Image 1 (tube, rainbow, N blue to C red):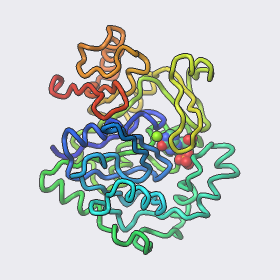
Image 2: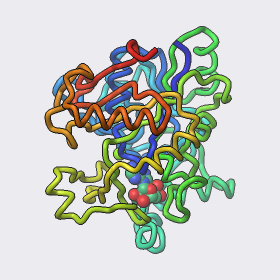
Image 3: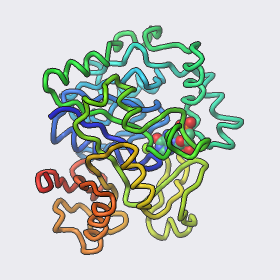
Length: 336
Ligand code: IMP
Ligand code: MG
């Protein structure tokens, strides 16, 4: 089954965690490996009535057989990581690359004030200051952290060996392409590239290793923090449409806007997406709630999906119709 890379097509919070949890249960990856920035990400995973909020571990944690890894490009907050390992009893299947950067208390303090907090509206989790220090080559790295020593390994090697053996590896991106340091609207971006190429580099796989690039969009746009959001709705209109969401890391009310085809076309291009997932279709079209077949969707919702496929020239293979991992339309067999 090779290698699938999952990335966000917008400003983060596209529902990647939900799509990943479904794939983890259905396709049973032998390894799920996290790329992306670090604990500024918040992934919500709902399985069998249990809600998990993850900031460090891969969202594929819902499948107890999947080995969980964090690639060397990622920043680790040891407190958050150890808490999540404990909460999910994942001690025996977690590996952290020895070269991951370490977030320290002073990075978090620096991220909670001044320019970063007031102008950029960061998540305040220390990732920007820690990456800056990493570039200056004065940061601590994971192999120096006694507290996580039993989880340290050579993740890039393990991932490449699994691919050599023909195993299925799921590479989990975080944030979204429009927040990329390189491809977003600087300076209203995160502290690294988070497009598919950046995520591959984070885990140590070359571009020829990748079989599918799955780009995840929500049926509408949301954004937390500062920066442009075309077509932004007023908070009243956001609530009226039932599109209100609160940040899973920051608790902030997310700004919202309708789906934007032009932006989506651009992120399909930047990621060389081969597949698309659309999440929260049931939020925009309540009759779509819990549908598991395309034919069960209301006419308007089907037309929306068709127009995405036509305009982005990429198949929509997953459609999220509710919060649970199993509330999904999986069209892969129908489209391949
Ligand atoms: P930072 O990544 O915490 O430095 O924040 C930079 C910008 O990216 C801010 O606008 C944050 O709100 C946004 N951001 C970072 N991570 C996420 C995420 O996982 N979801 C949504 N927005 C994010
Ligand atoms: Mg999130």
